[in-house]
Length: 98
Image 1 (cartoon, rainbow, N blue to C red):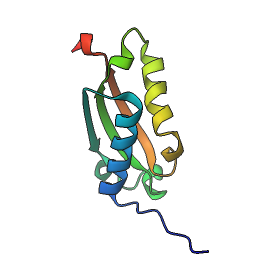
Image 2: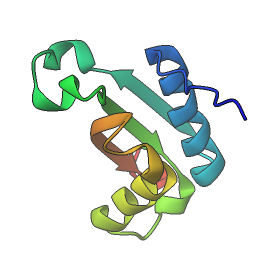
Image 3: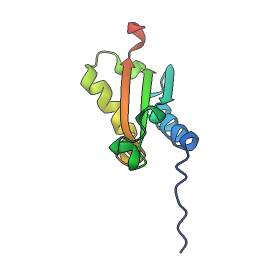
Image 4: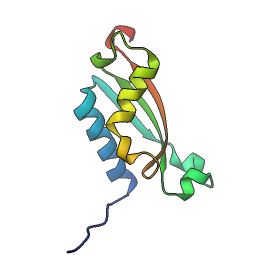
């Protein structure tokens, strides 16, 4: 049985993150930025995990507190946390807040 390695190139990683967010939250807007270069030398960067900034607008956030919005985001990428994603800065808004 052969094992196919995961391609951890920044573009592919960002595409996977974006796809999971779009599938789980059907966002009206999803702006994902790779901020890893600013964190070179940081312990999380050494493990290969990236630093990302996310601005996401989804109707699923209507009526939810910030902690629940973040939970929905983290739930959609949970298996990528700590290996492909070291840090994720989130701005999660409902359409009525834009």
